[in-house]
Image (cartoon, rainbow, N blue to C red; front, side, top):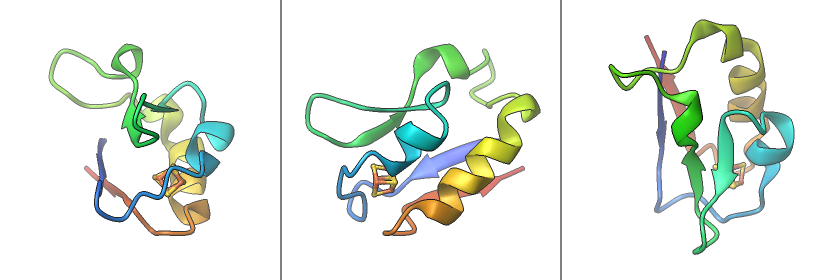
Amino acid sequence: MRIDIDPGACEGNAVCEAMAPMVFALDDRDQARVIGEAVTADGSVPDEHRLLVERAAEGCPRLAIRISG
Ligand code: SF4
């Protein structure tokens, strides 16, 4: 799956990081990022993380996380 985070919507409250810490982390500007270790060579995130990523997307109060693929 692919994960996109809307930087204009993210308010840095770390809900996603708390729900899926193996995939999301805040950077030094308090913006959510998909951590490098979670991304494969083709830029996708393995489906083993899908359930937690979907929960994080649903839990994001700004609806800033989009999942595709
Ligand atoms: S839960 Fe949403 S608003 Fe909060 S840090 Fe993650 S992407 Fe940003």
